[in-house]
Image 1: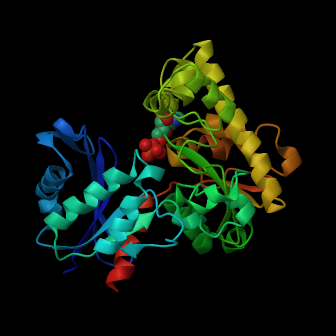
Image 2: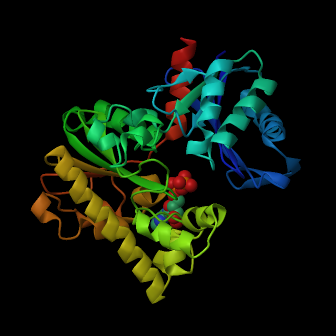
Length: 379
Ligand code: ADP
């Protein structure tokens, strides 16, 4: 019988997990998450919810193993794959998380203070639970590491670039998955010029040429580019200066930009696209107007970087499911070769265009990318 791989995606208050059997390709056995880490956490698998009481990452992993024991059916967890937001300048692919690597990654925490420490706490917890299993780190930044210098830098004095103030780009595991699907199913498109729009609670777009990232809307942090559920997206740095002059602290500005902005801030109603689409409030409509305006603008910019466009791929919860947002993004884009097929779009079909540019909606699967990296490591 095969063994098992656990994948972990740790946030500040949640630990998403999946369990795969170590076949090639890995077979998904279970997916779920521990929510509300802290004094009263709960474990969710599908519609089933179990209260697990006070839990940090270590307790959460124990609860996950208890819940997974039925599907594990005697299989041992022989590797753990981790989603790690920041791999810095060095990591261009998955790595074994040795003590030395973990130390390097901890040093990157100031670059991603809301994510990196939690990712690394999950690694320590998994090491306690599985001291003999290799821990494999998969980075959201890795897919973008081949950018040209001009796409990698800000126009600040050079010393800032040298100390790591760069346009790293994120959502790389999602882009990796989507380019893999294109390579297998649409090799001609995969060899060409593609813009991928990952539209989930976090959102970014990536220009991909011949399977390689050449530019991303996200830069130094996971704040830049598109408006998101609660994050602001692109902002004139002068706004930050104004807020600081007004006396807001770094912590207050962080909360404002990461937690209170985006769709939530603009609508004053919700961060959730489904709620906004269902709302009659003019503020909800305006939030959606801004959301799609930014996507369209970035589509134009990334197409210019690519020198043309062969395909536009939507993924993430909104990209995969919202025919309305896809239609709003593609409206009036015939000049670019984009014409949506309204029936295919309404049905969430994979190919949703009738014009020369292929427009596709492809469900992404970041966990599978992590599981495959772990299987590859074991091999
Ligand atoms: P995360 O980035 O946390 O993984 P998801 O990729 O699941 O998030 O995306 C969550 C977003 O997807 C939410 O804004 C949610 O409203 C939106 N979404 C999911 N299904 C639909 C749908 N059918 N129509 C519109 N939006 C949807």
